[in-house]
Structure formats: structure tokens, C-alpha cells
Length: 117
Image (cartoon, rainbow, N blue to C red; front, side, top):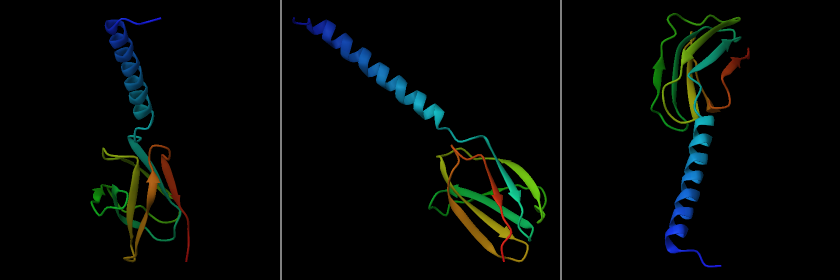
């Protein structure tokens, strides 16, 4: 059986469109959540929070409004547009800075910071 070149071209275009649609569905399924929930169960208050693409130093400050008290307080913030893998930079009241990451924000929508000494 021989396919006419026009029919073959239409079949190839249809297959290509189907593949492209499948890729766009996967990309949609892997979008960063619009918000991220942070629970501070550490001893110290968080005075500054910033987010960046994983492995970069392009941090964007997150407006917490007020320090996130230690003990067991929480905040939800908007995640800037970008890829799934992000780093968080957290500055505590005593001046200690912690960098956490990479965090897959397409799969993880929150984080609980535990108490440590």
C-alpha cells in the first residue's frame, strides 16, 4: 500500500500537532503553584525571606509584612513567575542566614522550618 504524498504530509502534521499538544499539557501540569506556605517552627523569628531560581543569586525579596515569629507562625506568599526549582534565602532575627534548596515548587507547596540549635 502506497500513501499519496499529500496524505502522508497531513498524517505527519497531525502526529506532530498531537505531540505538541501532549507537551503543552505536561508543561501545564508542572506549573509553579501561585502561592507557597511557610511555617516557622524554629526558635528565632524570620526577618527576611527571598526566592531565586535554583543555584542562582538572583533573589527576589518576599514581603512578609512583619517578621515571622519563631515558635509556630506561618505565612503564605506569592511565588514569582519562573521555573519549578527554587532556592529560599531566610534571614533570622539573630542575623543567621540559611539558604534552602533546590525546592521543586511544582510539587511542593509548603515548607515547615523545624527548631534546631
